[in-house]
Length: 209
Image: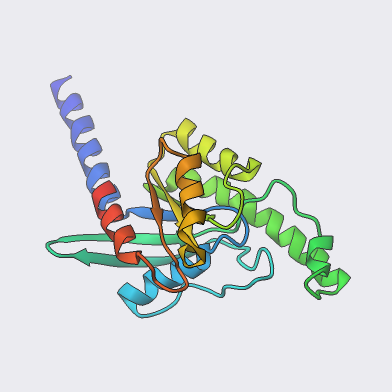
């Protein structure tokens, strides 16, 4: 019995060290909130290459993308992790939304199917995350069904997360609305495009993990 108990304890310790070496940070949020732009900013800063293609067309990211062994260093602290960019979460995906951006009907329907599949995959990956950055477009209403659903899921699953109020370059009053809407959660205001307060985000990541 003692040997069996010791074996279980060693297995748990081994799993813990394995997990520490494979930390996953996921970027989640609604469509066009700037997740891929932020992923590109982080990857360019620390590994010198971008993650993927950002676009104004909704659901440009339709598959899970991951960059491994991204290492953030701030003073004496460092953190190595796998960065995961996920498709934008949406409660409804209509192919007609893509027609407005100049896509043909066949292409629009294909993209809608791919986007739906991407959302399902993103949700499946959620339990693999050690930390989630919930990227919100601070120029939009923060209290949407999608945002509340994402945060509610994270709370229910006990997954640590930070809210990233993106597009801070559009004005402080926008990011303040996000902070006021979710006062019980930690929020970091950044501009992924311009790099505003990106150092503050890195400090928050190191503090959180």
